[in-house]
Amino acid sequence: MGGGMHRCRVLVIGTGFSGLGTAIQLRKRGRDDFILLEKAHEVGGTWRENTYPGCACDVPSHLYSFSFEPNSDWTQMWSGQAEIFDYLRGLADKYDLRRNIRFGSTMTSGYWDADEQRWHVRTESGDEYVAQFLVSGIGALHIPNVPDLPGADTFGGAAFHSAQWNHDYDLRGKRVAVIGTGASAVQFVPEIVDDVAELQMYQRTPPWVIPRVNFDIPPEARRLFGRVPLARRMVRAVVYWLHESLALGFNGHSGLMRPIENLARKNLNKTVADPELRRKLTPSYRIGCKRILGSGDYYPALVSPKSEVITEGIAEVRPHSIVAGDGRERAVDAIIYATGFHVTDGFDNVRLTGVDGRCLADEWEEHGIRTHLGITVAGYPNVFFLLGPNTALGHNSVVFMIESQIRYVLRLMDLVDRRGADSAVVRQAVQTGFNADIQRKLAKGVWSSGGCVSWYLDSHGVNRTIWPGSTVRYWRRTRSVDPAEFEFTPG
Image (cartoon, rainbow, N blue to C red; front, side, top):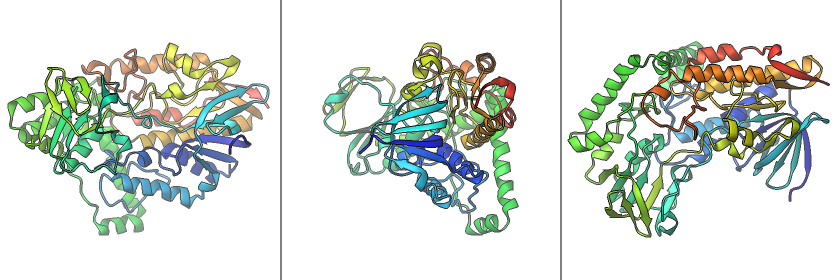
């Protein structure tokens, strides 16, 4: 039964990397008056939701983890979903966070009470949470994007999104249609191709795929990392700077990406002998415009005699078949959507009402998603977004970005306390200047000039997803809070 009222100092939405990282740092600083709302019944966010075969991180594990909570025991260079999920659950247990988590609680709306100087947040169950600070750790990759295909509702076979994998359905001997060729497809297609009778890949845009073979981290190396933390930190530093070196190529110097593009092209040419299939799989845009993918077995899976790559689009889905754009009908037993997530429009569900009754979702829909540093929003005091707009990356680890944001948020909370204030809200002019600056930089980036349309862009073709430039620059921008950028309401 819902309907209760709960008060706390800090309310955190979500228990993925962002939510758990915030909670850990709050606890470390002695700020124990916090509650986390989690829609599911376990922590983990993206790494709880995605359980498809082959699911793994495409950033090396020693970098895709918190610097303040390193793990010496990663078993592979690029860890699988189960290992990352275990890491996050382990953090929740180590810091005794579960007593602060309200599982099965989905936030539906929130409003700022200017008189009380508090956020009031409601959940689906009818509970109300009242908090001074509201931290959104919902991330971007949590609302599956299933295309509205003509006739899809008439399909009589199994149909599911890669993020909602149906493990009860046996793919063995089945004719399987995979729609989409993004990061998840590149991982699960090689895992299922040997089991299925037939694999139909419906491809709109081919990805650039660089060759990559995952490898185990030897037990002796893991023991060394545990005994000599400096060795582990050195590995993390090397991995970080190798990734960071790509930032120049992504941001206005795309010629620097040519060696990587040549590597990807060589990988394709070496693996795919059939000229027609090779033509279908060759991207027409500059590498980096869409997410660069790494795999050593994706192309071999498509070369399999069981596989067919279809580039004519989908005209119609029928009860037991799919009709392509050229009119050809193919029998299908199961459809797997590898079509990504609602990213730029994923914030449409954020029903927050700020100062003077302003609705955040409506403002963002009308004027585009705008924040300051991807964290704070003019007109919405004491609300903070982690991994918010324009802070995702194409070249490095988002966990690094999340850490920078958590540090910034906690310092802003400290600043509010030191000033004896109740709230802080970023000035409109500061937010406007920040967005003009990043859009100017994004216009020079490969996402804008590389000749592709990606999930980084919103419905108006504006990049509201990627951070332009190096993560070092973001780290510098968020190291400290400039009080002049905010208006404080006295306590």
